[in-house]
Image 1: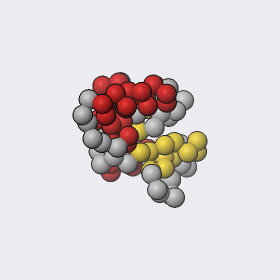
Image 2: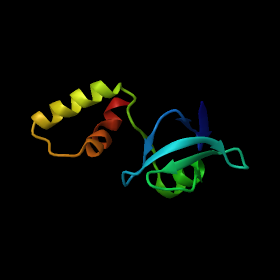
Image 3: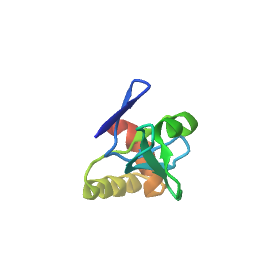
Length: 98
C-alpha cells in the first residue's frame, strides 16, 4: 500500500524515522480526508502523514532487511569499534540501504 504526498511515494508497510529519531508507523487507518494515520514512538494519538511530514520530516524509511541480518550487521558494526544503540545504528545505516 502506498500514499503519495508532495510528489513523494510512501510505502505504508515501512517504518519511517524522522529527523530527531522518532519512529512512525502506519496504523492501518485513514483520516476523514483519506490521509494515512501514523503513530510515533510513544504517542497514543494518530497523526495524518502530511502533518507528520510537514512537522517532523523528512521521513526516512528504515531498512526492511530480515531481523537476523540486521543483528549480524549490527554486531559487526560493534566489532568495528562503533559504540551505539541498535536504534542509532539503524538510523545511521537507513539511508545507505534505500
